[in-house]
Amino acid sequence: MANQNHLNLIRNIHEWNKWRLQNPYSIPDLSNADLQGLNLANVNLGDANLKGANLQGCNLTDADLTKANLHQANLKEANIRRANCYKANFTFANLEKAYLSEADLSMAEMESVNCQYTDFTESYLIKANLTNGNFTHSNLQGAVLTEANLLGCRLVSANLREADLGGIIGTHTDFYGADMSGVSLEDWHIDDTTKLDYVICDYCSLSPNKSVKFYQGLTPINLRLELSKSADSSSVKKQSTPAYNASSVRKNYLHQGDSPYLVFN
Image (cartoon, rainbow, N blue to C red):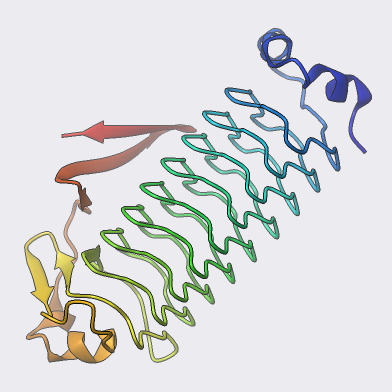
């Protein structure tokens, strides 16, 4: 159960953040708390215990959720834009129709998460664990999923335009009907269990120096079949520095300790 003092304090973000600064070693306990609809913009919930909490419809814009425990939390329709969710635990959480544009979910644990119709536009899911997650109809346009684990993940009819899927684990992953135009597929790991039927993809990148155009427009294709037709597509060597090109901007991602940094070149 949640700590009653913490429950009272969270209602005032200014006082809450002040308390967090003064008590850096105190771990907030808001487990199973009903925080539905609260304005928690810019709140410091780093390392907080939010297991089973109801955060439906909350405003968590620019919030610090670094390493927070959100196991089985309800975040349906929450606004989590630009939030720092580095290494946060979202296992079995409900993020349906949530808004996570530009959020940092790098190395987050998101096993069996419900992300149907969720907006991840230009978010960062680098090395995130998305095993068995449901991302049906989700918007991942321009998202960076470098080396993420998508084992058993459902991305049916998802928008993956210009997303970086370099180095992902994509076995048993379902991309059926997804829009994958402009995706980066450098060194991705797929096999016969990966579903790539009825995909929209007029072009994709296999390395920083190699792209493939299919000229299909909005006509669905079998991406596996089209890639097999591309000369030496299976022999592309991994580059020493993964590249992500969205909106004509090169973005490299570095971590210094537990602090994520974006470096724009």
